[in-house]
Amino acid sequence: MKKKIAVLIPAKNEQKNIKKVILSFRKIGKVFVVDDNSNDNTCLISKKFAHKVFKSNQDLGYDGAIRYGISNIIKKNNNIDYLLTVDADGEHSNRYVNQFIKKMNKYDIIVGSRNKLNRFSEYLVDFISKIIYTVNDPLSGMKCYNYKVLKQKFHKIKYDKFDYTGMFFLQIFNKKKISNIKIKVNAQNKNSSFGNGIYSNYKIIKSFLIIIFK
Image (cartoon, rainbow, N blue to C red; front, side):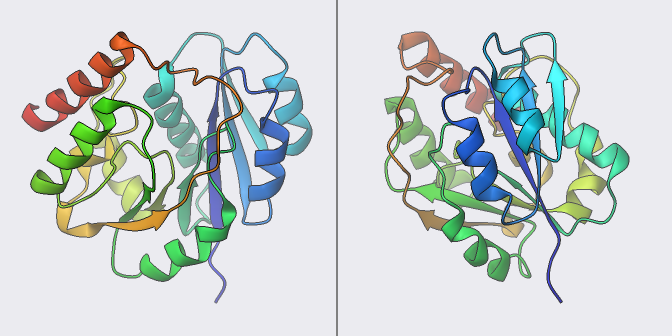
């Protein structure tokens, strides 16, 4: 039986890429976009091509946008088998989706382990995560969740405004039920909205330490 997939895309000022990303993953399933208070045409473009757009009028941050999207999808959508998250910058390809789905029968979440990382902090987190959680690249934006398990566990995440940079899943999923698939990422055609400087690296490391010791 064909699995029903929802695709969630957090987006911040991505008018240059969002249409292409939506159309690519619309072939996989229903596409939901979280417009994280963009000041360009991201929301307008998304409304034309996505199944649903969740508009935030305040800056949620990357992790907050994903959690906001999941929360809204859970409220009104039951007929879903898997929820796939991908970034809005075009870094992720839909060609790996079948690999994710084939592996999902044994795991609650599959993380796409990127062939190259963007910041030194990501290499550090990748190294430590492999030791503690036996999972590579927890910062990857391409993840596939077992929707039923996600619905059951999502309420366990403490509601706050802290940006866990997409690693909140480490708080709620059994590490034995987390696995990886290796993926190659596409080149970015714009600077990351998350940033690449010292502060961005600090935020990533701080987020990971909070998750470890929380």
